[in-house]
Image (tube, rainbow, N blue to C red):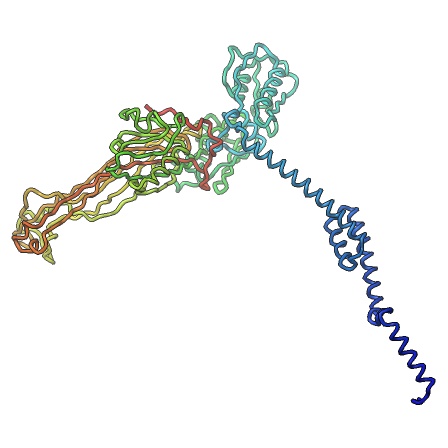
Length: 620
């Protein structure tokens, strides 16, 4: 108010001095204003610390780690949060270590199991899915029991007046021991009147299935007994008149296409008589000893393949057997063929390194013992090109791969074709890889006598006969899958045809075109054909190798002396024309594989019931 007031001015100077003396000793105003926010962050960090601690105690490590990290972001000097975060990391490390050790142990077990020798051979014979495609489906339990009865084989069976209950107990024990699943078969006796029934089988039966043993028991019992298959057991009971007349309904499922096709082949049923299937089936079953007249009955739905039969249990068993025969579908076989051409000037052909004792090949009767695929004196298979016509061989997959690799690296070996075709067992398949050429085959007979033939264009080819012919590779093969489902009998006829050109005729012939006489050169076409007919038995996936083909190529070479060769008449003495024929040997590799409807192999290498260096017995 009063700028000259000395007291006020002195007080102002004292205040300014005091403020100057306080600089650096008190917090700034901004810092003082931020105290509430800092206190809130401290409080929030403390809350996050307590949350993380609680989650750590509840083994929620991931959530606890997130809370504690957030607390340290808000309060980096929070030693408690850092301590509990280290405990979380330690716990997670223990979990990861335990998981790693568990994975390592599991991997070791998997490696050990993969190196273990498969017990496929120990469990043979096993039901082959391909062979049993004609099984009639009724229920899963009944199908499982029927499969076990057919697959479990007993070395010796002999009983001398043994009670049926003891016989059944013995069979149940043997079935459980021989069942690969170690579940065995359940047996049930109907009532007490057959438990003590004496059973005698003399002399001993050897190498018989469980189903054959049950048939022998029921056929040789003192009283008429029978057995039937339920969903969970084999049921023994007495045969009675009332039981013979008791009717049951059973549902059979078949492949409608396969079933009707075989039924038509068996009975001559035409496609137009589709409504007559039931009457035809009645006759088929009647021929098998089952009369399905009223009150027995039969119903068939051809769209879904469902067959309902109302008959006695004995009749139903016969019906199932007949349907199984009519529902058979032959397996599919994929045939892969490879034709390899080898130059005749190649003296020796290296066919890969094949260890002695691993050579699954048989030599033809004319094949020398030191020529592939006969016996070896070394670990390498080498043949001479002129000897490829003298052998046949069977190679395991590994050996076939080695041979093909060796041929692929040979510059003088050329793959002509590698076709494949799929067919049914017992059905012929043909592979053709040919070129169609128009060949002058001869003189038209009408041109040999006047007035001859009429030509609108008066060209020289008018007197000739033309024909289109196919030249190249043809392979006819018929595979037959054996009943064991592993062996394949092959009947193969590979054939190679080629057109080599025209031979020079000895004389010309006189022909007439449009009434005019002329001299015509008669065509003499030259063809070459090589064909082999062979039969062999191979395991599924093995390769049949055939030699004996000679492929010929003919080429004309014209040469002349420059200038002089172009002089009319005189130039003939300075021109030359020659025909060169090149011969080449051809090897044929044929590999059959049994496949399913999707084109996948039925058997893997581990499933094959033979040594990798073995071949089946060959036909004589």
